[in-house]
Length: 139
Image (cartoon, rainbow, N blue to C red):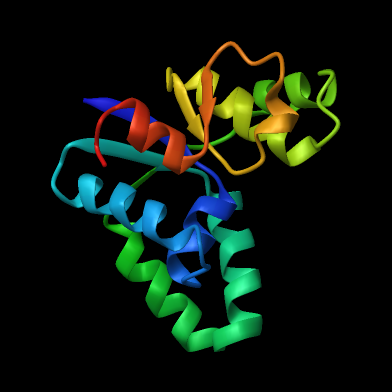
């Protein structure tokens, strides 16, 4: 089964129903619900998701949305080692560096984001949800 790391945008696309990206995130999470994918993320990503969501739908609704989604996500931690690697990397975006090194540390070979350009030299597969679904013949 594919282990796939998802970033904030992928989760927000689903929960905020952001068009035109919502459909691809919805399909992705449906496959996770069917146990055809294992989706991974971090506490930081969920915190960022909550922060953005609560501005749009309120505190309680944001918590409820994340609580429902949480059952489909495996949460992995970022360590001191990951933070040090991120700080010493060539990434221009520190958050992206943390996500990348967290995925590597946990043996996750696929990272899904809409921010592909920040992962130019990645040693993992970096795709948008749409690219991932098409490549794997899931849509």
